[in-house]
Amino acid sequence: MAFAHKSLLGIAQLSTEDILTILSVAETFYEISERRIKKVPTLRGKTVVNLFMEPSTRTRASFEIAEKRLSADGINLSPSSSSTKKGETLLDTARNLQAMHPDILVMRHRAAGAPHFLDRHIQAAIINAGDGAHEHPTQALLDAFTIRRQGMPFGRLNVAIIGDIAHSRVARSNILCLTRLGANVRVCGPRTMLQPGLEALGATVCHRLDDALDGVDVAMALRVQLERFGGEALLPNAREYARQFGLNRKRLEHMKPDGLVMHPGPINRGVEMDPEVADGERSVILEQVTSGVAVRMALLYLMAGGSPDSVVKES
Ligand code: CP
Image (cartoon, rainbow, N blue to C red; front, side):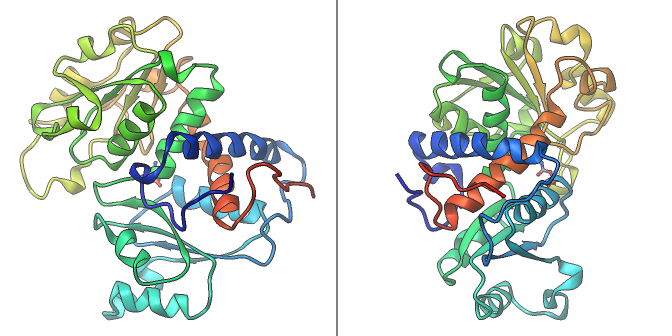
């Protein structure tokens, strides 16, 4: 079955079958990044615009690498290199980009709903690369892909998502994605960082970290997003946060012995987790980054009209 969506705006729009299709196509693309020549002609002639209106290291580099490995023509725009700096509206920027007939627009924006807004006004497919505190669907897909590659079945999976849940698009997308795949998801963080409605999304709320970690397969720590606090004092200080919610070697003993540690990055070392946890044997943080390229190659391929049943990836 072909991918049935014009754009990828959030996990909320995806069925379980959609998610499994993306993960399975990503599996077929994964080995391209391990080849000596990491390039296939699959998206030759397709144009992708990467419009990143907020800082990014992993997502932006990952999309750019995915586009290059698929032979798409990718161009990059950021606030400093675009005419938004001269006062052009987002819609005018997008309409002007549309006039050059791109096939896909990958977009990160600080405003929740910005990709949804553009999707109503332009013909190019849009991939949401993170919109405010709303969704970061490709992060959730690459996290699910990473977990699956570790051989953990979603139906028996227990995951704890820890930290600044309220300001995290990663948390929202992961709760939606992992519960849709059949996993049990707990969330844990300071009360000021746990918004109402988490149970309705499918998560169980824990207030003590040791309870959240008890017997879990995956501990996913989130970055404390000081830039989204809007001047509110939601945290006493970083040291107190680390004491109550930071992952350290002792705390990991509450997890299953083979449990995984994940983090979407960038990490505040010593706040969300100790360096020995970030770099330790349970950490799959860099595997998440590797997975991101394969997942984004799969999405670009599917959204450009590729068939999941006959993936073209020969050089
Ligand atoms: N995980 C993630 O979105 O990282 P970047 O902000 O560096 O893209």
